[in-house]
Length: 110
Image 1 (cartoon, rainbow, N blue to C red):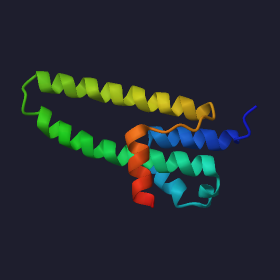
Image 2 (cartoon, rainbow, N blue to C red):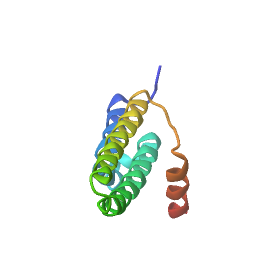
Image 3 (tube, one colour):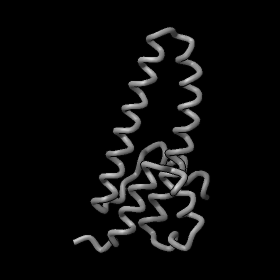
Image 4 (cartoon, rainbow, N blue to C red):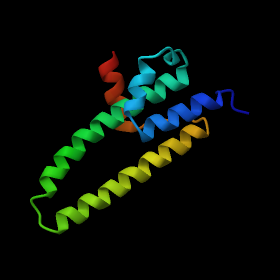
């Protein structure tokens, strides 16, 4: 069975859904757990880059009447589904890498 504590798997999953929580975990003593530290750093990088994309795409798609708003709403739904999938994988105890986000995260941390 998984040797990762259930509480750590839940915290990692919640950090993907509500990424500011990952900042609190990174700054707390919980960062001693390698599984939780890895996922919280990755969730923090994903959330902050997602915020930048949200703002940029939101401004750009506002220029296209009606279709732009529809596309923007579709992207928000897809983004939420993606984050939900990541949270479910954390609950299963998987340690996975999000390709561009992982590279960005380790490039900044080195």
